Length: 176
Image 1 (tube, rainbow, N blue to C red):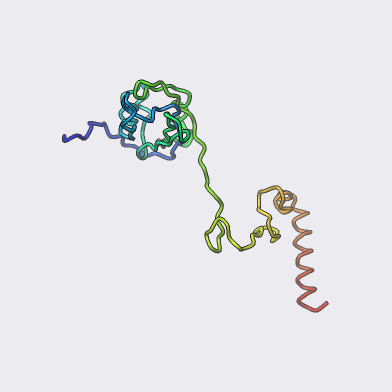
Image 2: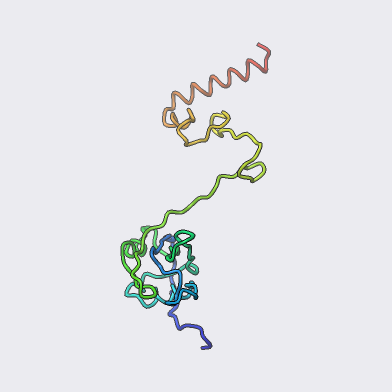
């Protein structure tokens, strides 16, 4: 079939994905250290492992160096999974042989990235940020600083605060 590996396609209705990583994958796929490991090398190792019934990749694996001087990498990958994470949980803690190197499968934490300003979409910007609940500067809902967030389950406190804010509005609008 012209270099395309024979794979059995998976057909189903996935409900979720699990984000996993494999630590300790060699950076080079040959002994001389001249040929870089590719996502195809990783996929072949996954398909040849005893856990292949759980490898339902959503996309090609992503290879990241552990550090600039390291000869090993971390491979990040997503798999189709149930909402309970059955496939991911079955793989976590297992060891897989990749390029004759035993590697461990672990859960990966999603990195949400850097918060961006909603005015200019920049990370460092001249705009002030304010809380959407209490409208104070440099306060973020859910940060623990926001009084509205701290009292979100205290209905009496919230009603009193809104009444106070309405009095301030009506007092300034009506002139006193």
